[in-house]
Length: 484
Image 1: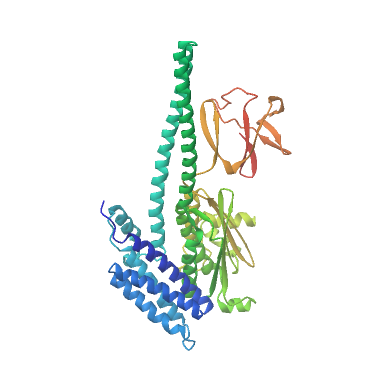
Image 2: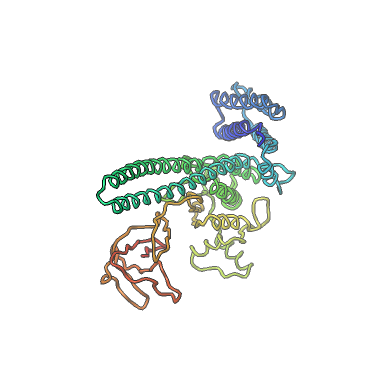
């Protein structure tokens, strides 16, 4: 396979332009100081030099222009204007576009780039797509590594079976030769060989587990990789409709599956646009309500067991219930009287509380994107709103590729229960099972929980006999624990 001459430049440039974009956004918020300006100039200069090395004159010229814009800011006599920020961010966008267009030795990667750019006006790739595409390429390499480790695990299982065969041969040698010297010598040699193979298998197994754990960690990427894109989206959306917004994100050190983060980025971008369009008021409206002129959008990411929670909140006017009821009535749908059920209808998609169609809102598509993301990831979403703003909580798996599970066997079949859902395991004597018209149940930690056998026959009945040695797993399902 031909080498990709831009492989390392593409990665380095992507990281540098991401840092530049993030730094420019921070510059707009703080006004900047000499040290911050100097750091941005170093990043721009480094990227310009790297572009010159690989003979990418267009990228180098763009970075030269960035230096020309930043250099005067080192003097306190030059003020930072909004148009200057716009020019700097536009240059970052152009660099990302040129990076996406770099030729690659991998035809599949080139095809992926073309496909990623399809449907974008003028074929220009949005700035946030470049780092995401690099993440997907890395994930493919890690997946290949994990697949190889799986094959090694299969071979190790065969080695363990061979050890068992050696033990059987040793027993046969002793039985066939009796107490003869030859039989005992053969048995001793087989015993020594079995010990050496068993020790080697244990060492391989230990190293294999450690390598697989390391590979799984490589597959995960920090959440803060999407924060700059979300902040940029909030800024641009606010400027397009004459509003002011500050974006604050926390929990960026948490690492999750890159594929999950890819999907979540699309959903969160929609929530940002919705918050600016529907929630955040204009500076004049906020002043009249006694609020600060600049609205606030906050994103907090946290992990609970195997799940990741994205808590997204704006401090705008909140959801207009009357407008939501009117929108549902216009669609011929009944509006629930319960407030929580009414707000939940937003997550069904196709409903907009906007009175007019704009570039940001009015078509009811935004929540469709969020709903589709939750469906793809197997996640859940909920919404709440009050006079102080609106909160969306999105819960998704940490990873789609691997999950810690409890392996259980019933009637010769092996099944996996998500370990995060298992509350505990115990042995349940048959006399402690409570029988009713709804089936069996058991008392666990003061609660009466239904007993559901894992193996179900064709007639819908338990396909196995009760065994006092059988283990019962307490599994959290929905709002209550269940037994399986």
